[in-house]
Length: 333
Image 1 (cartoon, one colour):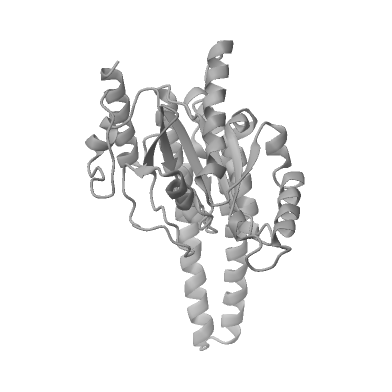
Image 2 (cartoon, one colour):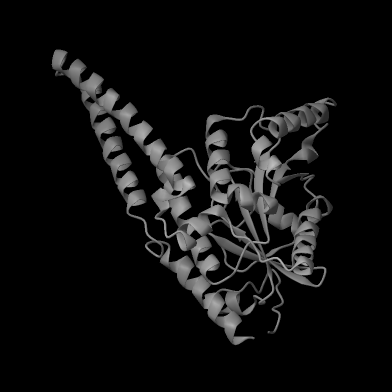
């Protein structure tokens, strides 16, 4: 298959152009991380070129997620073709995370059924975060269940923004190192014990290339030893074990979040209703109760949507695009 040349003025616009640029033996690298951790910046530093443009057009440092859908990027390195699958950043909203997980599950299930397995998985986290915030903990747990113990051998826990060390205070680097060690010994301990590795991004290409070198080495070792590639836990659960998303380990975590939120909102509704019985003309209470009732409806709809998910049930555009990838690759053999 002919390789496609990319430059800033000739970015492929159609899915056909995107798919024609993908080689059969390309390395698939999946990027995960919460909003604002710098996944798009990682791709920029590596020099990966977009195969599908997202709604945003420039790498920024705002809190809004740069990636609104699953996007594909391409890079040639050491005579190998790498395809980066840039997933939307997880948020602090269970409804948003449920939609994102469903989108990712559709893509991963499709790739698994057609024997396209990830060669590397990157989970990015900002080393500048002074604490492992609640949403970061939840998303780390969600990521861990998505990959599973068997998938951890593909995982790189990438801490970003090491390049700012020393810019504000000479002791910043030491603080970052202590923080990294606390993650390694704490929240990331089980993942590392299962085979995940850590890496520091200094906002340079050289600091990121070892991740690609490891992917190349893993594939070569697997071929030498006659081993088959291994999928992620959620891929095996959906395709091989025929589970619905809510029955997977990752999906059950979100289902529990929906349940906890439902209990919290119901208590709020009951409290506001009692207060309104005492003061029925209080407009503030009336407005607050209406807001809570709307939140309850949204939460119920989100929970039902998660329960009703079946493979190919949503994300039709991404699934159709990847099906075309498989068809083109098969015809190129």
